[in-house]
Amino acid sequence: MKKVLVILLLAVVGFYISETFFDIGFGNSHFVNNEVIKPVKDTYLQQTVQELKVANTVTSIVVNFRGFDTLGEVTVLFLSVTALGSILYKRRHHVGDRSVLFSASSIVTAGSKLLFPAIVLLGTYVFIHGHLSPGGGFQGGVIIATGFLLMLLAYENYSVSHTNLAIVESLAGVTFAGVGLLGFVYGEQGTFLENFLPSGVLNDLFSGGVIPIIYIAVGFKVAAELTGVIYTVLNEKGEQNG
Amino acid sequence: MDSTYFQYLDYAIYGSAVLVILIGLYAALVKKSLLKIVLGLSIMEAGVNLLFVALGYLKGGTAPIFSDGYDPSQVMVDPVPQALVLTAIVIGFGVTAVALSLVIRLWRHHHTLYIDEIKNLKW
Image (cartoon, rainbow over all chains, first blue to last red; front, top):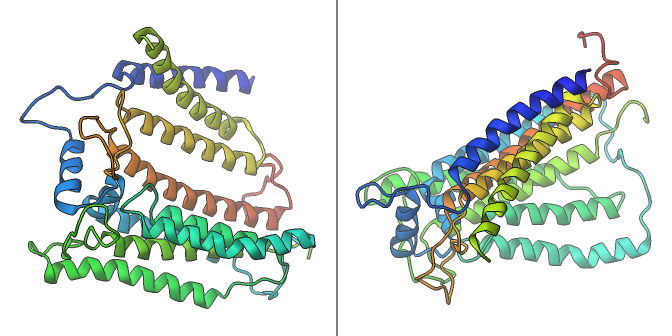
């Protein structure tokens, strides 16, 4: 009975959502061609390549045009990691006790030892080249965290220092906010997160002003936070088995 | 490819995104296991992200990246929904992590994941 009701409800919801989107149409421009009112995308694409000299428009939107939004996003991520740690906090804390106990075969341990530096290098590459190619701080940070996950799964006694993670995370956060505050002092208009460094040449590694600096900070921050989440959850020992 | 095929493709992409949202909503509404409910929320989020990126697509558009050898005559897809989805994915990760930690906490207390077996509201 309940399932029938739910399916009916979903049919109604789905019909109206899809009807709206079918009306919009797929792949069409959503704006009437007009010289006065232009979609925000045109301004972003133009300024990205002409003023900021950044190749990847998504990066320039995330870090420059909507940089304040990204600062809020990083804050939400930090908050959720803190909430995770405080919800899973236990007074009787056994250091080194893992919820997942298994012995990995020697192929897995040897292979992950070989792969770990390569994964970290790939992640670093992705966030350093965030303004030139697809990718960026968030993606690179996630790749680095998967490397740590591999090591935590392969080695039973592999541990990550929470203090070091907190230091990396705080330094990266301070860099992001500090670069934003420097915009007040050195920027032409004196606004928060303003690009005050020279833009350089398009498609150069050192281009785009403060955008690579902020994305590198974001990469470190995301890597530290995600590693912290994985480590906290993996070390969570239920009362059932311990 | 002529235009009628494209018309069917329109329905296919928006329709499948809406379908993914509905599958997630169904799991969140009907399933009894807390893990499946959290999974349903994640699936719903994936559907919303798909819908959003599809909304920014332009026919014949390329990726909004000005790397070497890009063609200035070609149109680019809308980068704004892509940037918004990048934000949404990270927020979704945070939401899922906190929800799963609450599930772990409930398991610690009740030793069950089925919401119809958790009857007392006191912890």
